[in-house]
Amino acid sequence: MNRTGIEGTAAVVTGAGRGIGAAVARALAEDGASVAVVDRDGANAKAVAAGLPGPALACPADVSDPAAVEDLTERAERELGPVGILVNVAGILRPGSALDLDDRDWAEHLAVNAGGVLHACRAVARRMVPRRSGAIVTVASNAARVPRTRLAAYAASKAAAVQYTKCLGLELAEHGIRCNVVSPGSTDTAMQRDLWADPDEGARSAIDGDLAAYRSGIPLRRIGAPEDVADAVRFLVSDRARHITLHDLYVDGGASLRG
Ligand SMILES: NC(=O)c1ccc[n+]([C@@H]2O[C@H](COP(=O)([O-])OP(=O)(O)OC[C@H]3O[C@@H](n4cnc5c(N)ncnc54)[C@H](O)[C@@H]3O)[C@@H](O)[C@H]2O)c1
Image 1 (tube, helix red, strand yellow):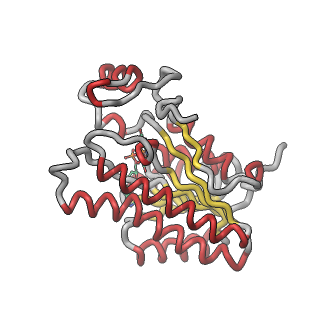
Image 2 (cartoon, rainbow, N blue to C red; image 1 turned 135 degrees about the vertical axis):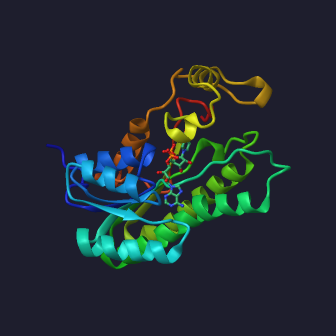
């Protein structure tokens, strides 16, 4: 068997109650990690943790609450061992025009999508530093780089999360800790389907693109699966990526036309 360095490592995965986060939790558990399944939906966190093949801990918590994140990190270290992997997946998306954006929506996007990343990285990385090892991945979005209509708050919050993760990675490199970003495009989850008025038409429009909304389509002509994103994460946290840090890996079927 090829060793990945994931075996026997404790991992914290936020937003793991469903969608991409649940797929990441499963991928890491399959590779031998014990996983703290963090989600503000406690019932989903419990169900995912119960279905994992290895040791797992359900941690109901809101990542926008720094004290709750500190508590769950403490608990994960006590019950699963030193946390060597952190994957930030928790996120919210509420579409709305940039002009009519209200203060509360703006603040909530920043609190969860950027603040949540700060809180989890801070709690986990402070424990990684003295151990001189660890891998962190933030799941952002291709919207962090490509402007999108009706996604101003979401895109801005994701851009903040990307740049925070990269600056953190720069500071932590000398401590042997790697920090990378995975940026998905349209991926088949509840968050994506909530954007579609009709499932067939929504998928077709995402694949074909929409010139009126200045949105390119998906060159690979499919909607991503949560497992596509999870596979990128499992690579970046593994020893196979031991010389990769500050990277932003797009998993979007080419949608952002990024060279
Ligand atoms: N699905 C897509 O097309 C897509 C594309 C690009 C980026 N993303 C990003 O990937 C991540 C996962 O998306 P998804 O599609 O699986 O979404 P999802 O809505 O299906 O799942 C998100 C999970 O995060 C949890 N969560 C939300 N706010 C939280 C908080 N404050 N504290 C703790 N948990 C919280 C939710 O309860 C949910 O279980 C998100 O950050 C999203 O922005 C998704």
